[in-house]
Amino acid sequence: MGTIQINLLYTLLTAMIVLCSGGLLGERVPFLKRFSIPAPVVGGVLIAVILAVADSLTGTRVSFDMSLKDPLLLMFFVTVGLSADIRMLMKGGPQMMKFLLVCSGLILLQDVVGILSALALDLHPAVGLLAGSITLAGGHGTGAAYALRFGETMGVRGAMEMAMACATAGLVLGGLLGGAVSESLIKRDHLSAIGDEGDSEDSAAEAPSPESSENISAKSFLYTLFVILACLGAGKYLASVVEKTGFILPDFLFCLLLGVILRNLLSLTKNVHINERTVDLLGNVSLSMFLVMALMSLNLKDLASVAGPLFIILAIQTVVMVIYVRQVTFAVMGRNYDAAVLAGGNVGFGMGTTAVALAVIKAVTDRSGPSRMAFLIIPIVGAFFMDITNAVVIQGFLALPFFKFG
Image (cartoon, rainbow, N blue to C red; front, side, top):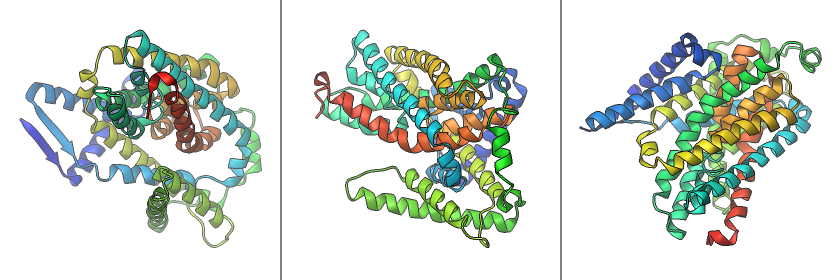
């Protein structure tokens, strides 16, 4: 009975055990392997279910020390920035704009579906927004912010619980369905990363750089870790400075941009460079650990406490999401292998977070082949443009007369 407090050391140890368990299950369970379900999602959901059952049966809760969870996410976004060559960003510009328009359409659709579903179920339209882009595209942070305002200005009861439940469900569904969507498209259209148009041109145009061919060493590991932590610290400081002006931007955005700037400045020098293999290693580790810690700390009982109509809305949103990415995202992005991977990534951050999207496309590309375009577009669009677009769309709906939002 009561709550068991787990300190940081044992939280990290538990997270690693959960991650390894998810990896083993992902390799040995045909369903998980077939649809490229990321190991952090498999292990994280499994432990969350076990802890929820234990809580229901014995009344015992487990509280983990999650002080490293957010820094791990910021570290990951720094590594994304450090991998972004400005020449590749320029090359991916047209595709990036198309993907942004597709994702913006999805955000708008999520809110329309959410509001109409809420009205059909005789619920406050604000519940539809909470079960729309606020939590699905926005995640827990955006959901918590709007839930507080809905509770205060509209008197929506249980707004916080609903927001957390929707964000949690979206996080899990995004991780589970993203890989399945990509794999189904790849197999249906017999797509392959080898021999796709553009791949041979990329390989011919880009000679292996010293930093990409250099082996990982203790020196490169410590140097890259120092650079990542420096960007992380500077990014958080810049976010706090900008926040004082009243213009609030997420701290991960500053970390990402600092990584991009530093990477491209260092590329102008001959004697100082960052080992790309080490960046990839640290990025993969930080992303995997963040996802495991985020999922294993979820309280799945929140979902049960707001079951019923909310689950109906989420079920409708899930069906609409899958149809949209298969029929619109995949088609607009070119109906090729990159488009299939991007469709899965779209599910990842359309239902969960950018971190989930990147875990999805990593699992897919590890199994089916590389997609440079997906790893280029998803972080920029998902981590930066979508937050701005989502905020604009939400405020547009809240300006409608029947919301009476002040």
